[in-house]
Length: 345
Image (cartoon, rainbow, N blue to C red; front, side, top):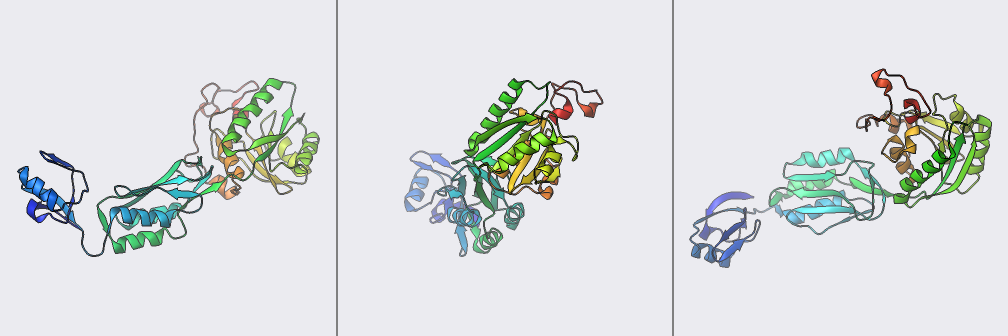
């Protein structure tokens, strides 16, 4: 691609680099310059123009953006028509955005003329939401550079994992200090979290905060049509030998991981019973504010596995907020009452 300031009479067949407005003519950025445009520029007294001329082997910006977007887009995405060297990608259904970070980095590393930007990996998205954009910076790129970027994108660097689990069973454990209104509010908050995924609560069980009683409730849910089980404890999980993990084991399940490097959300547990994932919710899951529970819940609703390795990689970006309404153990202040920092974590 040749970029130069040219005498107007030599600019036929080039593209205008900048928008230009003069008496009798308006040239938009990227407009083709033909004989009519040259005549109008001369009539307006303009002698020179900044223009680009494509060379053999160059691929125009729109064609290049369209080809790269097609290569990068995996399942669950649709591409808009190219314009000014840009193609936007949109989710076709609600779900979890999956981004091959290494592939995106490789694409962006091919040449400064070629860029692709995405929303974060694992972000919940809705149908019609823009999730990525491909932008070719200049008016054209060499065919070899475009080919290298397309090779880097092979297999699709971006996709949407649609929500697949729609039926959620909930067990709330009870202690005398826990008001029934708190449990009711917790379920309303969970309902709101499930709504974007098209999921709903199909079972609402309440049981004493004791391993045996909770294990019985978990067995009932494991035999039901619930596809995901959430346990809200009257008291937060403090150890793998605490009530909730002990009940999961007693019900024939197992605990895959306890604790996560996300705050709020530290005291989350992930387990499994009869092939169904189980989340031991941290106390902060009673709040509608974003916390680590959201990160795990939406992945499991999309049937995206959550392993120990996945959880331990959540630390970068995992500091979501300070809960200023309660004392902070990090500050050395004591915590008291049913809504302690430990129960919120």
